[in-house]
Image (cartoon, rainbow, N blue to C red; front, side, top):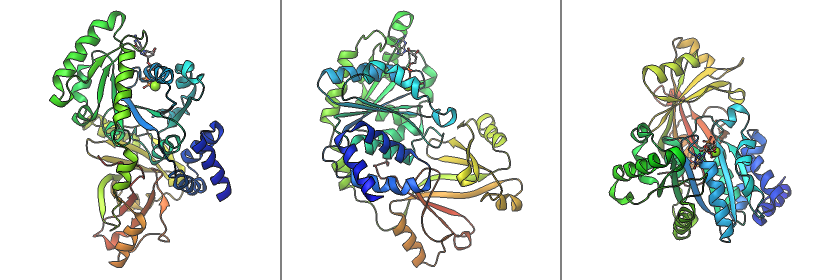
Length: 409
Ligand SMILES: Nc1nc2c(ncn2[C@@H]2O[C@H](COP(=O)(O)OP(=O)(O)OP(=O)(O)O)[C@@H](O)[C@H]2O)c(=O)[nH]1
Ligand SMILES: [Mg+2]
């Protein structure tokens, strides 16, 4: 096992395409045995000497992110940069992947020597980035690339998360969409280094330019001037855009070094609330309630047979709700619903920096851990533990280890 992982790590560090592809498949795998191997691989890859600068390209579906990435990528390659792309597709976990979609959209870039393009499912279907995405970034980032372009769709919580994972964040928007601006989380507007209004061509040229001016007026003073319009289709404004992004990337502070300086808290104390999980006998109806009655954004239901539940994520500006419907014979939520037949709060999940330190801390205080006390891999692909509700004032508490790449922000 270890020799195999070492060979995979060596291949990935050297930029061998097959090794990179296999390493990515390993970290994206949902199989338990693969999760252990993936952690070992990531630990070996941390030896990478000069990780790629990460450029996040985010924005609503259809704004033209893939088209733009191909055009920017071609310009970076012409400028002598080595480029790779990770396109995270929130729909692919449901539809089985739009791998061909993005590859054909980037067909010219795909053919360039030394360029590596990889579509990746987000994992939990919530649009939020999973632990797997973070690991995929680490794999690609450790290869011999100058720039790692990360494509993610959506707006809201997922975007704010992206900001913590990249060195430069570019927000791509389509012309018009004043509602989008209203709906867009303030955080993302402030976190973006550049806002690009795409499709400044044909009938939407004028609209793109006025949208760009609107955005420029509405974002905080520090961000003014950071709004540009372009046409990824016709190429207008792209040389200038590529130059500006390149400048931002080359002057970005060394995130790896900053990350290393930011020691993990080894006290085992709990950190951010990750989500509150709510059990229900009908996840579709519950999702419709959060969407239609309360007006929240909800994901599609996702069956997770390995966890015995079908889940829906309800996105909130500062956290998430996870709706759980039992799946299969021995679902962990079936017992709960026998007592609380109308459904109810099943558990809360808090993040910790170091899952083993957290376990030792609570154990010393006499709190029991459910199961054998060994962390298992939870729905986000990260190690988790559950604390006994009888020792926690009646509340089932899940502790989840924070992902290894800086995710706070
Ligand atoms: N007119 C015009 N159309 C564009 C431009 N850029 C992209 N498109 C078109 O917009 C559609 C969506 O483009 P994509 O590049 O796939 O957009 P995306 O943001 O990657 O979409 P998702 O990955 O599905 O979220 C395609 O039909 C493109 O051809 C542009 O600058 N002008
Ligand atoms: Mg795309």
